[in-house]
Length: 225
Image 1 (cartoon, rainbow, N blue to C red):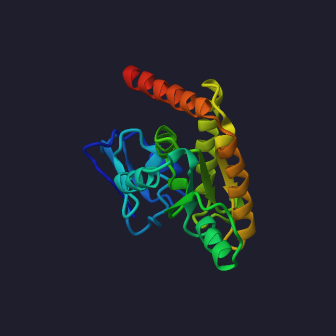
Image 2: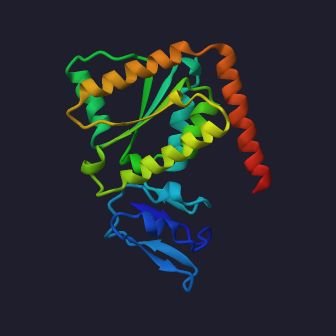
Image 3: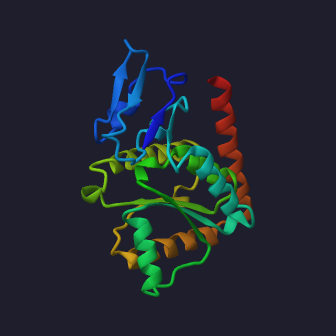
């Protein structure tokens, strides 16, 4: 389940608006919002919506995921594909590819989340700043989300990041959004193979310029906030 720290909550209500189970209550009068634990299903879609770091999801905290990203990119990061995969579909799809002996590039590093709606744009940014060759965000098909419609927020956040990449004139092919079901091991392998081609096509100069532009944009945003 998710937990809201009332000392950090500004009662903006953004988290409540994205919860597919209406499991968050509160308001300006109370001065904060809180999670109704009995109703929360643990998708984590509310967490990336909070700009103040007031929400955490048990077992998938910011600290835990960031540590996984950093460890995955500790050596030769430019050769790696970071794949954020939802537990119920794309993670299971990757597993199905393995048990079916469907080969795909070994340089992918899969980070499991309960729902793709938990994937934060900050994670995507961190992976790229750490030098990742490419990033995949993958989850259930839109009509089959395990958490009702939580993955609609996945699409919105990735599209927003693509727009940011457009503004910075960054190679958008390095960020991929893919819907993969638990039975689509072959599709998961296909996506990774296509991303591997993108990674191999990058020159050292392109990689360095990508990181420099993204880092500069992050610093500028930090200074203005």
